[in-house]
Image (cartoon, rainbow, N blue to C red; front, side, top):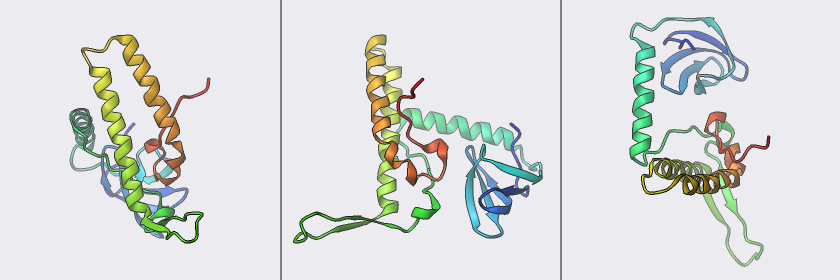
Length: 175
Protein backbone atom coordinates (compact mmCIF):
# COMPACT_ATOMS: atom_id res chain seq x y z
CA UNK A 1 0.00 0.00 0.00
CA UNK A 2 1.38 3.40 -0.99
CA UNK A 3 0.71 6.13 1.55
CA UNK A 4 -0.60 9.50 0.47
CA UNK A 5 1.48 12.53 1.31
CA UNK A 6 0.38 15.76 2.94
CA UNK A 7 -1.51 17.84 0.38
CA UNK A 8 -3.13 14.88 -1.38
CA UNK A 9 -6.72 15.50 -2.39
CA UNK A 10 -9.37 12.82 -1.78
CA UNK A 11 -13.11 12.29 -1.97
CA UNK A 12 -14.56 10.33 0.95
CA UNK A 13 -17.97 8.65 0.69
CA UNK A 14 -19.19 10.18 3.98
CA UNK A 15 -17.26 13.47 4.30
CA UNK A 16 -16.86 14.54 0.66
CA UNK A 17 -13.87 16.43 -0.69
CA UNK A 18 -10.81 16.97 1.50
CA UNK A 19 -7.06 17.47 1.70
CA UNK A 20 -4.65 15.27 3.71
CA UNK A 21 -3.00 17.48 6.36
CA UNK A 22 -1.18 14.83 8.43
CA UNK A 23 -0.32 11.13 8.24
CA UNK A 24 0.10 8.76 11.19
CA UNK A 25 0.63 5.01 11.25
CA UNK A 26 -3.12 4.27 11.24
CA UNK A 27 -4.87 7.43 10.09
CA UNK A 28 -4.94 10.30 7.68
CA UNK A 29 -5.87 13.66 9.16
CA UNK A 30 -8.01 15.23 6.47
CA UNK A 31 -9.54 18.70 6.30
CA UNK A 32 -12.88 18.32 4.53
CA UNK A 33 -14.74 21.19 2.89
CA UNK A 34 -18.01 20.40 4.71
CA UNK A 35 -16.97 18.85 8.02
CA UNK A 36 -13.56 20.34 8.77
CA UNK A 37 -10.79 18.22 10.29
CA UNK A 38 -11.51 14.49 10.59
CA UNK A 39 -9.36 11.42 11.09
CA UNK A 40 -9.96 8.50 8.75
CA UNK A 41 -8.33 5.08 8.72
CA UNK A 42 -5.57 4.70 6.15
CA UNK A 43 -7.39 1.67 4.74
CA UNK A 44 -10.83 3.33 4.65
CA UNK A 45 -12.85 3.71 1.47
CA UNK A 46 -12.09 6.91 -0.44
CA UNK A 47 -11.12 8.00 -3.94
CA UNK A 48 -7.76 9.64 -4.55
CA UNK A 49 -8.26 12.74 -6.69
CA UNK A 50 -4.62 13.86 -6.63
CA UNK A 51 -1.83 12.02 -4.84
CA UNK A 52 1.08 14.07 -3.54
CA UNK A 53 4.35 12.50 -2.55
CA UNK A 54 5.58 13.92 0.71
CA UNK A 55 8.91 15.74 0.77
CA UNK A 56 9.88 13.66 3.79
CA UNK A 57 10.00 9.88 3.58
CA UNK A 58 6.46 9.20 4.83
CA UNK A 59 6.78 5.45 4.33
CA UNK A 60 9.85 5.29 6.53
CA UNK A 61 8.18 7.52 9.13
CA UNK A 62 5.10 5.28 8.93
CA UNK A 63 7.18 2.17 9.58
CA UNK A 64 9.14 3.79 12.42
CA UNK A 65 5.97 5.04 14.09
CA UNK A 66 4.27 1.66 13.68
CA UNK A 67 7.28 -0.15 15.19
CA UNK A 68 7.51 2.30 18.08
CA UNK A 69 3.80 1.91 18.84
CA UNK A 70 4.15 -1.87 18.85
CA UNK A 71 7.08 -1.69 21.29
CA UNK A 72 5.30 0.76 23.59
CA UNK A 73 2.13 -1.33 23.61
CA UNK A 74 4.09 -4.48 24.35
CA UNK A 75 6.06 -3.07 27.29
CA UNK A 76 3.64 -0.58 28.83
CA UNK A 77 -0.04 0.11 29.28
CA UNK A 78 0.04 3.21 27.08
CA UNK A 79 -3.43 3.84 25.72
CA UNK A 80 -3.73 3.89 21.95
CA UNK A 81 -5.60 6.89 20.60
CA UNK A 82 -8.96 5.75 19.29
CA UNK A 83 -11.35 8.41 18.03
CA UNK A 84 -14.97 8.34 19.19
CA UNK A 85 -17.69 8.23 16.52
CA UNK A 86 -18.77 11.76 15.59
CA UNK A 87 -22.41 11.25 16.60
CA UNK A 88 -21.36 10.62 20.22
CA UNK A 89 -18.98 13.60 20.60
CA UNK A 90 -20.05 15.86 23.49
CA UNK A 91 -22.98 13.50 24.23
CA UNK A 92 -24.21 12.45 27.66
CA UNK A 93 -24.78 8.97 29.07
CA UNK A 94 -27.73 8.88 31.49
CA UNK A 95 -28.24 6.12 34.08
CA UNK A 96 -31.86 6.25 35.27
CA UNK A 97 -32.80 3.94 38.17
CA UNK A 98 -36.26 2.36 38.12
CA UNK A 99 -36.95 3.82 41.56
CA UNK A 100 -38.00 7.44 40.86
CA UNK A 101 -36.91 8.43 44.41
CA UNK A 102 -33.31 7.83 43.39
CA UNK A 103 -31.47 10.40 41.33
CA UNK A 104 -30.16 9.70 37.86
CA UNK A 105 -26.46 9.85 37.02
CA UNK A 106 -25.17 11.67 33.94
CA UNK A 107 -21.63 11.37 32.61
CA UNK A 108 -20.06 12.63 29.38
CA UNK A 109 -19.92 9.88 26.74
CA UNK A 110 -16.32 10.92 26.01
CA UNK A 111 -15.38 10.03 29.63
CA UNK A 112 -17.17 6.67 29.38
CA UNK A 113 -15.54 5.99 25.99
CA UNK A 114 -12.08 6.73 27.40
CA UNK A 115 -12.68 4.14 30.15
CA UNK A 116 -13.75 1.54 27.55
CA UNK A 117 -10.58 2.20 25.51
CA UNK A 118 -8.45 1.83 28.66
CA UNK A 119 -10.11 -1.53 29.43
CA UNK A 120 -9.47 -2.70 25.85
CA UNK A 121 -5.83 -1.64 25.95
CA UNK A 122 -5.20 -3.31 29.32
CA UNK A 123 -6.74 -6.54 28.04
CA UNK A 124 -4.37 -6.33 25.04
CA UNK A 125 -1.38 -5.88 27.36
CA UNK A 126 -2.53 -8.85 29.46
CA UNK A 127 -2.86 -10.90 26.26
CA UNK A 128 0.66 -9.99 25.18
CA UNK A 129 2.08 -10.86 28.60
CA UNK A 130 0.34 -14.24 28.54
CA UNK A 131 1.69 -15.00 25.06
CA UNK A 132 5.22 -13.95 26.06
CA UNK A 133 5.16 -15.86 29.35
CA UNK A 134 7.99 -18.34 29.89
CA UNK A 135 6.23 -20.05 32.84
CA UNK A 136 2.88 -20.88 31.21
CA UNK A 137 2.72 -23.96 29.04
CA UNK A 138 1.07 -23.86 25.61
CA UNK A 139 -2.25 -25.31 26.83
CA UNK A 140 -2.51 -22.71 29.62
CA UNK A 141 -1.83 -19.97 27.07
CA UNK A 142 -4.57 -21.34 24.79
CA UNK A 143 -7.05 -21.56 27.69
CA UNK A 144 -6.32 -18.00 28.82
CA UNK A 145 -6.51 -16.72 25.23
CA UNK A 146 -10.00 -18.26 24.94
CA UNK A 147 -11.09 -16.34 28.06
CA UNK A 148 -9.71 -13.13 26.59
CA UNK A 149 -11.56 -13.76 23.33
CA UNK A 150 -14.79 -14.19 25.33
CA UNK A 151 -14.07 -10.92 27.17
CA UNK A 152 -13.69 -9.13 23.82
CA UNK A 153 -16.95 -10.74 22.69
CA UNK A 154 -18.73 -9.43 25.80
CA UNK A 155 -17.53 -5.92 24.99
CA UNK A 156 -18.70 -5.80 21.33
CA UNK A 157 -21.78 -3.79 22.39
CA UNK A 158 -19.46 -0.80 22.84
CA UNK A 159 -18.26 -0.94 19.20
CA UNK A 160 -20.91 1.66 18.30
CA UNK A 161 -18.81 4.25 20.12
CA UNK A 162 -15.71 3.79 17.92
CA UNK A 163 -15.22 5.93 14.84
CA UNK A 164 -12.81 3.49 13.16
CA UNK A 165 -13.88 -0.11 12.63
CA UNK A 166 -10.35 -1.46 13.11
CA UNK A 167 -10.59 -0.28 16.77
CA UNK A 168 -13.63 -2.53 17.45
CA UNK A 169 -13.74 -5.37 19.94
CA UNK A 170 -13.84 -8.76 18.18
CA UNK A 171 -14.90 -11.95 19.94
CA UNK A 172 -14.88 -15.50 18.63
CA UNK A 173 -15.79 -15.67 14.97
CA UNK A 174 -18.20 -18.34 13.80
CA UNK A 175 -16.86 -20.41 10.92
